[in-house]
Image 1 (tube, rainbow, N blue to C red):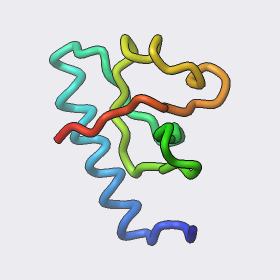
Image 2 (cartoon, one colour):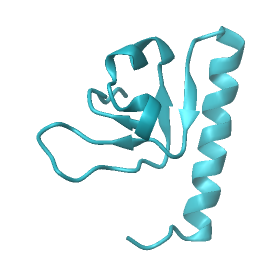
Image 3 (cartoon, rainbow, N blue to C red):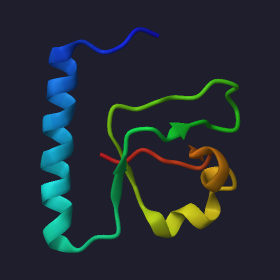
Length: 78
């Protein structure tokens, strides 16, 4: 996989800042991870998303989180 273009990186940085600004005043228990890998059980490969909003209370259900920053039970929300 090639590295993202600078324009793409600029857009992702902007969106991450906007999302963080929305989360912080609400005191929601979320954080944005740039390095966590989403790896569904049925797939051998994983996904490194541009922006991943993580709910820390759900991390107790993730067996690989502490050692490998991988999420096996992640779900998509829009």
